[in-house]
Image 1 (cartoon, rainbow, N blue to C red):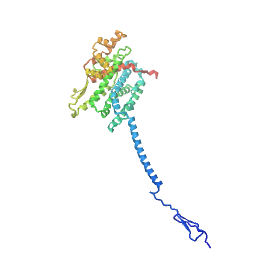
Image 2 (cartoon, one colour):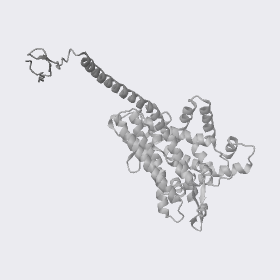
Image 3 (cartoon, one colour):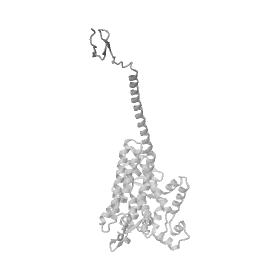
Image 4 (spheres, rainbow, N blue to C red):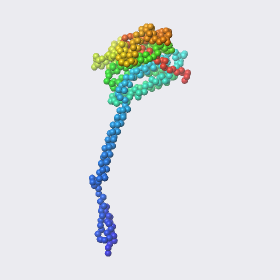
Length: 415
């Protein structure tokens, strides 16, 4: 008699098939072992995995390179930063003139009634003095040595902007103490040449130029700006009541004291200017620079000894060389400016003044009144050599009196 069907399970993974015809069971075994290299599907997967990693690596390298290229593309070229720094001489000089025009109108006796000030400089004029750091200092591709200097200069500009905000707020207070106003005026006048002097550090770190050359170039720009504005201004203006301050200051024996009295209460103009010849004195005090060049076109740095035996640097401008430098620029605008400087520096008397500024719409008294107010300016300009320390006071005085007509004043009663 045949035994019952037998079904058994193999531990390897096989199964026992039912055998209904014999006594011995037939065992079927399922092979579940793997051969890693012979399995085509797994080998392709591994290859694909490593190709994916390689693609990811090259994609990252390409992305970083593209990002770096975009970064350099958005950065300004070094030449643009150098050009902006050189233009700061003109910028800060114009700021200086505007500040002095404001303070001249604010401190003038005509702005008082029974000892109380009547008007203050418009906020729109004062706040224009602010200089945005990002408009002066660009993002450029440059080594670390200039980064720290540029960053510090940005902080100086931000500090100056804060001082302008404070000055604007103080000007609008009718009962503010004179000492507080004098301090505000001192801050914003002083900072113009101070910031210019500090900008030389950045320029020298970026440009292959000597310190004396950088200073000479900036003083040339200041002088050119003065004569350019003078040429475009209305010299004979009977409505400008502040023109009388030109001779009041320049014809006085103590010009500096008169300038302080009318415009600059704490003498910040000369205090800031003296940083520039001081910088030159430090430069030439280096024994390695003995005999080094001191003559830069029309600018001469000469060593003098004061009454106390202390050596200092005087900056002298050769008028004719200055005119020749402008004329040699070669364009029509520069040639006309050079001709203008030649004409006004030849004015030594009233008749010559009327000839140079002749206008058929003007009356004889208009010429006379103007000449009586500003003849001291022409007397100084007529010299062949200009001591820059004295020249600075002369041109600032002349320019700020002309600028007064552009300075708006707000009446305290309107507040």
